[in-house]
Structure formats: structure tokens, C-alpha cells
Length: 428
Length: 165
Image 1 (tube, rainbow over the protein chains, first blue to last red):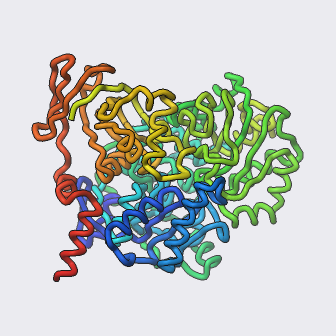
Image 2 (image 1 turned 180 degrees about the vertical axis):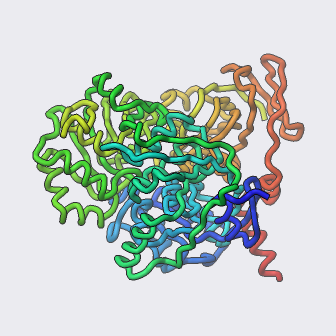
Image 3 (image 1 turned 180 degrees about the horizontal axis):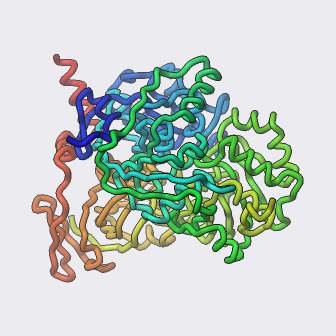
């Protein structure tokens, strides 16, 4: 009998029997996540079901992040539904303006999502947490409701695609470029229903920030989950999180794929041969190398650094170092949205915020805001934006005729200075 | 189930189905006013209740927003047919009771055709061309959920069974 993948092992652990890809399992959920947009529908279903209490109140985190602080009356009313529910059920993990952040940056920072967990969230980018060696996937509001009522949910254990990362990435090549390169190769449905497992010696060069970016965009290839097993870099990150929060939500459990585990496909990405990647409108699979993008001479109206993909301290650091003492081009504006309050504060203490503002950027509170065309950076007709976010669909950040070019934070910062898509390796 | 076909391409994403700028509410009737807006701003004026969307691979890719199947259903879309569906959308459509069907031969169906879906026989009949097609059956476990009346009903029945023990 063949060995098991890390994804199969996490499901086997939760199902208390050995399970393999293709099997349907009903397993307990360690952490359920909802936000201001998706939770109201879950709450409605919860109330209609006649349930009086949550199966596991400490396993449900509500993070208000998409339209928070509210942009209008409707979003304020919508937030109130989650807020009232959180107070009514005395939820331990409720985050709003008091301690805010984008859910997929905030929950790892708080030690609430951990290796070995099964995590579901009513947000497609819930796959981010797979970077910690957890099974983590997005679902709809009704599935989230089912999980808070019963404490469990059903899954079809996914087949896995092995992505081998080899070599050391060159300057200004980050996790974002690795995932954009993968999606360029396999397409936006190349991993439909599958697990994307990242493995290989190249991982030693990738920080947790890089790994979160990679797993975050697994959904952009249609994947059910992205996953990276725990190594020394993960352990170091967890130790820091444990110290900062005086503990973790639970004891982490480490799982590793067997050498003879089954994979339906294997892909190798040579990190040393990779250039920064820019994904052209209107799909994340439209990746081109930065060299090609520079040749295309694309004038940029807006640069956006933020989101659950690339709004971390490392992103602000990369941008601040490039922009320090320089100016954003006259016809370009730049928006920086730190992903959490903690990131904002640290960036402030390290002087990044000063560098960014002096260069001409506007720094906003943490929010999903501009990434989904919500608020705080909407694009007008025909405007072009270089964005560190995750989707460049038609109308995603505003007008139907606007264009989004997805890139890493260095490309974004360099493009802000040049006023057109630029190679950060040429600027310094 | 019978209706007129509206055709869309591959990778119809959830921002096309219902743009996030309208997600400051979850009121189905409000959401229904804006379906498919960024693909065709006049779509809601042109379509009629019971019409069927036929699209290419990976329909519903992108966000986990359940607002997408809710909005399509509230607008009166009778069913969606595509060769493949994005994973979260597939599950959400089920949970919301929006009928969706996997069919490889979508290229043989044209906009404006009248098609009939016979769920008992598992068939799509194109009345305009006279051709008929077998649709992929629903996975057995999901059939159980349908039988229970949906996921929340399933939870309720389970809960009731638990209380009786």
C-alpha cells in the first residue's frame, strides 16, 4: 500500500482512521472563520436551523475586515449582525476595529491557526493557512453554518499535485512570483479540486511571508488547498507567535508526506531561473516575466500594496526600502494597506510608514477594501493598476474597463516610482 | 425545467456573477439586480425567469461568496450548465438549491436555443437542434443531502435524532 500525503494524513488524524484521496469523510473542524460579508448568511442559517448554541464556540473566529470600518449604512448594518451574534454567544475570537486585520494575516499572527489543523473559512483565501502545515480551505456561508452547528463538516479528501521548488531565488523574486509562475503554467483551473503541496530544498529560502503568499493563491489555480509541511522556518515563526501571544490556541501537530505517497502530477519550479512575474488582465494565469512587461511600456495610474496575499510587514519593508528618498511618479498614486494593526505599528516603529508617506503613498487602515473593489482605492474607467493582491478579473477593483496587473511588492514599488511597470532590480 | 440559453465563456468568475461592490448587503432581491453585470451590463433586462446559463469550464471561480448562487437563483436563472465548476461554487450552488449540471458538449448549444433538463432521466434536450445529452450524475453523498432537503435540514434532522437518543 502506498504512503500518504500530508493532506491525507491530516484527514486520517481527524477521521481517526486511515483515509486516502477520493474518500468522503466527516471530520471535526479546529477553526471556522467568518467575515463581515459572509457571516450574516451563516448566522441566518444558524437561527433558521433552531440551534441555540455553537458546538465549539472557541473554534469560531469572526473577523470583520472586508468593509470595516463601514463604508456606508448597509455595511454598518451588515457588520452589526456579526457583532450582535459575537456578543450574544460570547465569542472569544471576535475581531473588529479594536484589533483589526485581514483574517488571513490576523489569525496566524494570533496563534489561532496551527499545524495539523483542519480549518474552514467563508472566504476563498482561507487556503492561506496551509503555509503552516494545516489543511485549510474556503467554503460558503451555509457550510460554515453547518460547521458551527455540528462542530464538523464533510470533505472529499483531495488528490495532490506535488510542486517541487528547487534552487535559490534571485533578488526580488518572492513567493508571489512562484505562485504566479505555477498558475501561468497550469491555468486557473489547473488544480481544480486538488491539493497543491509545495516541497523541496528551495523552501529553505522562503520566509513565512513568502509561503503565506504561495498558499494564499492556491485557489487561483482552482485548488482545494495549498500546503507546506513544517520545517525550521515554520517552527521559528511559531515560537515567535507563541511568545507574543503568551501561548498558542492548541498544541501544533506536525505531519509529513511519506516518500511513496501518491501524487497525480508533479511540477518542478526552478527558483534560480525565475524573474519577477506580472499577471496581466483579466486572469491570474496571464503571467509574463518582468522583462516582457517592461518592454510593453505600461503606464500605471495606481499602485496598491496590501491584501491577504501581500500586505505583510515584509511587503511594507520591501516597498519602503525601494521608495525611501524617492517619489511616486506625478501621474501615479499609491495606496498601502497594512494587513493588520500589528503590522501597521511595527512598520511605523521601523520607519517604513514615514518612508512610504514621504514618497507620496497614502497609508490606510487594515482592510480588504481595494482588493475586492470594495472601497479605499477604486479604479475609474480605463485606469491601470499594479497590485500586490490576488485577482485581476474584469471589474475586480472598480470600473469594468480598468486593468489590474498582479505583481510582488518590489515590482509594485518600482512601478510607482517609474509611473509604469518597472523592474525593481533596475531601480536600485 | 425548460428555458432559453444565455452563453458565456470559460472561467466565469464570482466577480462577474455578482461584483463585490454590491456585497454590502446579502438581500437576495438586491443582489439579483446586478448578476453578470460586468460581462453584460444589460443582462438582467434581457433575461427572463427560467432562462438557463450555459458556460465554459470552471464556472464560478474566485470567491467563496454564497451571494453568487443566491443572486442567480433570486434573479430567476433556472439552471447553470458547464463542463466543470469551481469547487466552492459547486458546493454553494448545492447548498442554495441552484440547479447546476456538468456537461461536456456545451459548444453544441447556442445562445437563444431552448433546452429542457430532465432531472429524472439525467438528460439535457436541446429542442432547437433536436440533440440530447447525458449529464454527469450527482455524487451519491450529495444526493443524500438533497434528499434531506439541504445541508441545514440535514443538520436539523441529525440534531433531532441526537436529542431522541
